[in-house]
Image 1 (tube, helix red, strand yellow):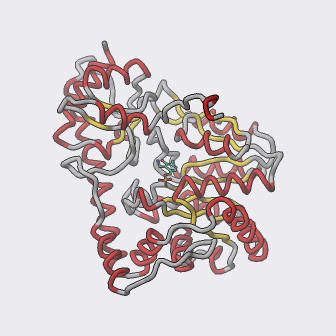
Image 2 (image 1 turned 120 degrees about the horizontal axis):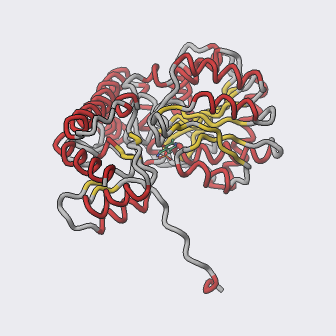
Image 3 (image 1 turned 180 degrees about the horizontal axis):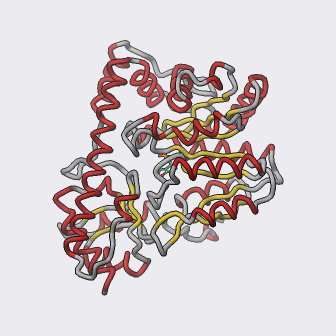
Length: 400
Ligand code: PMP
């Protein structure tokens, strides 16, 4: 009976790591998956994470089941980090927060909520977007369509197209927005553009749905990276936010994140939370405890919290410095006079190089540089020492 099952296609992002592993050339470089690496290109466990883990051990804490909604101390601090501690929406208890299985699991629970309570609504996602968004909404049976986002001519934002498409969507649609550090392009709206986006969303009674996977990791500041969400919340809008601690605390494999639903009353938030729990229970019963305790300890212990911010600045700073170095190397080596400054305008872990599929394949086949086929590279996987080599590879792939 299982004989009839066909082979599933490889995941386009995780498949890049497989190809990288199989390559035996010592020059090889993995710029596919978005995970932070040190200058020696090794994975990094934050010192604050180790300290928080020690605290858990010293206190002899147990491994009992969490409630369906997750660890209360985690849910409290995650909403505070996102909205800001003194945000009236928290004092008014208008936010329903439950712990999720990192960003992906939190998006998936929210998608299930949309499917159940808004069966006639669709969600608009940016073109392009993180590859898994389409999978998530397909699996949850939430219809989606795309809004214009990336303009290949400028390697920048197609702001007019974005606004037009959001305006044209049926009233009351969900609009998926990347809170900061858009994946895969690294292109974010300016504060002025964010205001205009909020204007059309509000006018059309759409519901914004933020995916916040890089808070603090993009600019180095937790507050700055949450400013888009906070601006929408300050307008009194209802909205959803999926959060992830994979990148900013390096907790990739712990699967820790949250889904927040900002409602118009405390009463509605209580009801929404009860339904989120109802959706979670048959899927995974309750979320994992370890990452939740790490986050609660890091954010809840003033000393660790300030140390976290320093480490995050260090990580964001390293990424910014290789971004600059890559730009410098490209500009120095490219004799055609092409302007590579779009690379400096992008933010976060990724850079969109403008390389097409065939050119991205040349990067792997000839140069042993692995990246997604949409032209995205993860700068978090690049070291200063490899910038020149990467610039050679990009220029060769671009012009040949
Ligand atoms: N959203 C975006 C935009 C992402 O880039 C990622 C990580 N690649 C996620 C969500 C989710 O990651 P995780 O499930 O590890 O939190």
